[in-house]
Length: 282
Image 1 (cartoon, helix red, strand yellow):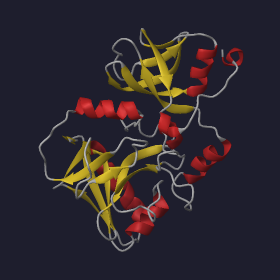
Image 2: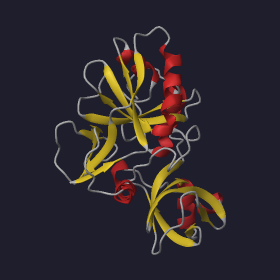
Image 3: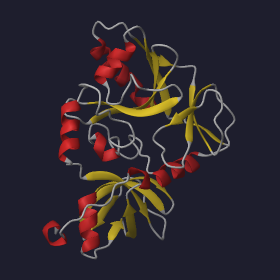
């Protein structure tokens, strides 16, 4: 078993008689159909449809939900949700007595929640509780994320700067296209129906160690993306897929700093790089 305490993550709980209906009306992912034992990706969006807060959502008994998110964003998230609560009967609190853990290469144990961002044959769990003995490093966990194309806020993308489609939330359950309105829903639905998402999370590979997170991904001297999590010769990047395709069509190198790279979309998405006219994109 690989087991790791994620000290940069923390939990916020929202519970009470109206908790489920409140969340169903506000956040991007489905709440009413959230099964027990799952940690589902989701977001609280700006009215303009960009990700303000990203999290993993799970049930914690009856009418209580846990939000697993970046530790430094919990206070702002609670303040924002308090604003949306209005007269709803719901309590919002920081969970201070439980740590966030990730587990993989193991069988499911009591209390384990399946992390629904990991698809195909990658089974990864979340566990919330007291500190347990670690058997893995953060570098190993980051390598697992990179291999599976799982991006995280503030490491792979800036909050309030990207749309859910950019970071694959349209494909990993982070957006519900079946429920009614939620904050930012109109913009997200328009992107879905018009197919206007041009930025996507891609997986980069190289023959040499890649430069640090934040380095530009370029082609012919033009920036087409930004590198996120780096693990040796592989990395995640948020990039314009149309410009990647144009570069490939024009036989131009993709460069991460001064390192040539290749870029693919995560296999579990079923996406393919768009077909473009290199001459029009140049």
